[in-house]
Length: 364
Image 1 (cartoon, rainbow, N blue to C red):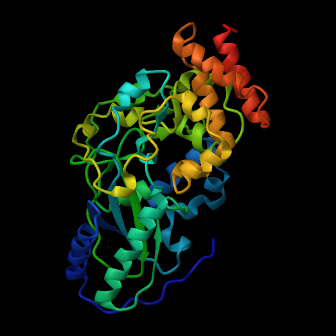
Image 2: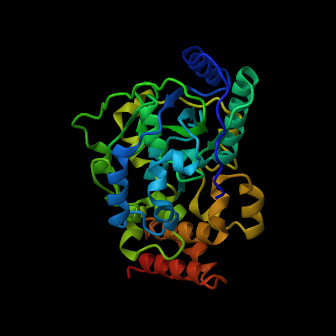
Image 3: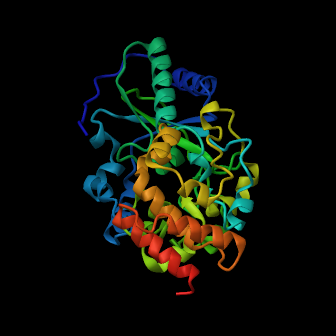
């Protein structure tokens, strides 16, 4: 990534502009906007400890950028403030998540990925937001990010007053739970910063207790190597054998820690058409998805976050899910038929996971 130094900011009345910025963000469809300073020094030691423990797994880019995540002014020289925004994503018409997870024959896909790729939606919205600010104050320097650079999004959002960091490491807020995306505008505008929110997790550890793979190793500490979201999305190779049965039918991401969180009883559905369910992915069988050809995968999922993992890993994940369908049942028989159809798949990765899944049904 090419670094860019921001130029001196234009003159303006800071407090009034900050108030306007929050209002403009709401007008543009964000649910909440806040402003953070760039002092993340308190978060840097924890970041380094997390990396040293190897909890980032195969996400080498996390280690590559190192402390730059905790130093916004090093990522984009000249940055003095970060405008943070959140956007709800929960589709209004999606099938009940717990119901899908309980039915081993159906595929569970994290609710954030049922519609259009959020990277594109958020980036476009943030650019419009920055253009609205520019129309009012004149040319200023900025860069927009949304899960696309070494940015400590949750920490910035916390400092900007958008919520607090939950024990599952996601941002939480009392009025909307955690089903939202975060985006940032790094800027040279010296705006007044907002005050952080206090933590409201209390003694609750439901997210820790429910994690299928015990990836939340301590409050506020996640071992990505065990996280189903990491294993099904970020991880490139074979899924560790000892974790496969624990994944169940979660084939792209995992929402268990969010589903169990008491604060998500206040979660709000999204009115964004881009986040509406596409291709019936909220309620579809594993076998049906496993039957897609590479061309069908591309045609149906182009423009989706799922498309980023590619067809091979998609089949890998589905093979694991099919291996976890209850055996010796009509659903199990259908799973075995689907798996046998790909026993000689061109991909060694897919063949390996298909063989494991068939062995599960054979009792081996």
